[in-house]
Length: 313
Image 1 (spheres, rainbow, N blue to C red):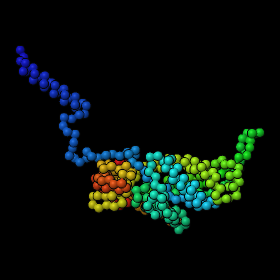
Image 2 (tube, one colour):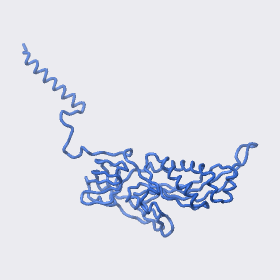
Image 3 (cartoon, rainbow, N blue to C red):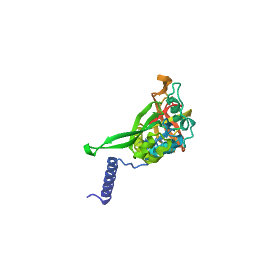
């Protein structure tokens, strides 16, 4: 006859075996989940964790309308409408940007074209992912007959002719270019004033113009959202580096990124220069985050220094 003590021992052993096997199957542990390897605080960011920062520069006014009217209708409204259209993107307006190159008159090459290399350099220094530039080319009156057969009648429009370009800070290349001819229906007296090229005539239908700018903003920001987030190393010493993005871009301590070396600078037509993306140089981990800066340590690799580009790991 089996003793009660032996029965208890067998049952207890069976219980612990079943418990252990259950934990093993479920992936749990009988011990603390902590580790002294130093990698338990690593975060792998995704595109949804990070915020792209773009800057809207001052647009050029090449039309006949006065500068005051242009600033009121276009420059101010562009900032407001683009901010509304670019949900999930941090938009820096011209008046908010402290970088003189991007908030003032944009630098030009000897041939008169925008110097995309210099504005990309400025963008890297301030943690900007993309730079939006552009110009109002003209506002013209257009008269067309619309309708069907006996219902056809003449309608008057204002055609807004704009050019918008978006430059990538990582390379200095143009990632978006569009010539926009937006046609807006206006009243006959507004059309007559426009045909007379009265500079202040556009104030009469400015609301119709600003409504069109919102749709333009959606088109531009849709293209920017397709681009991957990138960060830029602005200084380095030993195994520590400084990045020109911080809390404003969604960075958090523990995030790990792939680092690519600065690469080469190549020359193109009309004296333009561009950054040629380099090879993967290693990985870095964010250790300290400030409003618009972050500190990191090099986990792997050696050739990670000022000019290096960070991408999602």
